[in-house]
Image 1 (cartoon, rainbow, N blue to C red):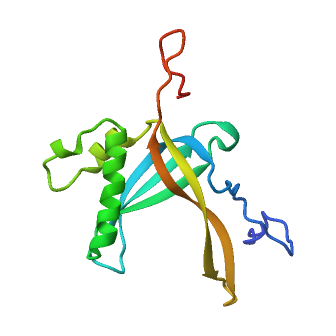
Image 2: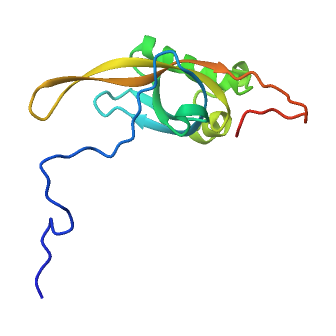
Length: 168
């Protein structure tokens, strides 16, 4: 009985393409999305950098199912960035119907954040940014990526049967 080689289960090729199904969404596109995942993360390089990683999933239309990730810095030694992250979270809570002035705890538990902002319809405007990276060969490459440029409350439309037609 011969031993199986490491590459026995794949075909040799001189070309590889990643299986990622990324489609660049045009600048200014407005879609309805929902937050599907929220996680606390820390930046190991800086002790005080804690942030929320927020995963958005587009709900319908041409880009339905596509995900975007957004970060909200919530604990940092950089006061400007920390306030920007907290403003994003405050806006999400407000869009989801929470009076943020009634929250009197110094920190928020991830479970309460998820319960408040996940799976709610939110209108987002897509932006496009150039990102520069150094590849494995040391060459600088530029590629484009999407980001969330704006978030807004979805205005509910009540139809003839008395419910809203948001689509979730």
